[in-house]
Amino acid sequence: MQGERLAALRGLPVDAEGPVFAEPWQAQAFALTLKLCDAGHFTWAEWVETLSAVLRDAPPDDGSGYYTHWLAALEQLCLAKSLTDSAALHDRTEAWADAYRTTPHGKPVELAASGPGSPAL
Image 1 (cartoon, rainbow, N blue to C red):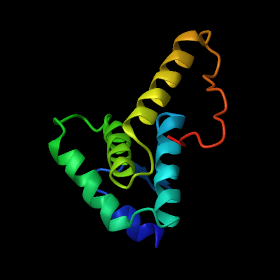
Image 2 (image 1 turned 90 degrees about the vertical axis):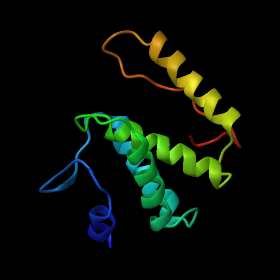
Image 3 (image 1 turned 90 degrees about the horizontal axis):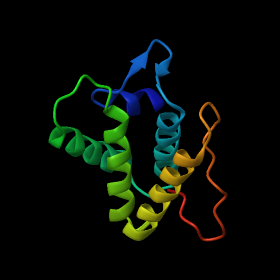
Image 4 (image 1 turned 60 degrees about the horizontal axis):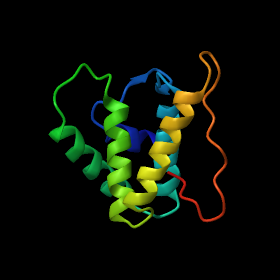
């Protein structure tokens, strides 16, 4: 099943072993998408349709922006399925940006643990 899923994703960066990621956040976005799909929050067909629409509307690039588009599609689908809301996405994005800005160079960026009921995104 995994191979069939991956084959449906136009432009997915892969090598002989499967998907490849340039940054940890890309792997996390990929894994979160699979987890939400496996949990029944959306179908794989819905995911492929959403990602395809985002990629179709994106300006051409060399493929380096693929996971930025992936994340945009994931956010779009999570909003459409009421898995989160715009305010929660905005707050989480700002929290990550703040953590990034205040992390010393060379240290891993860490986001404070979210409390009960906090969004996963």
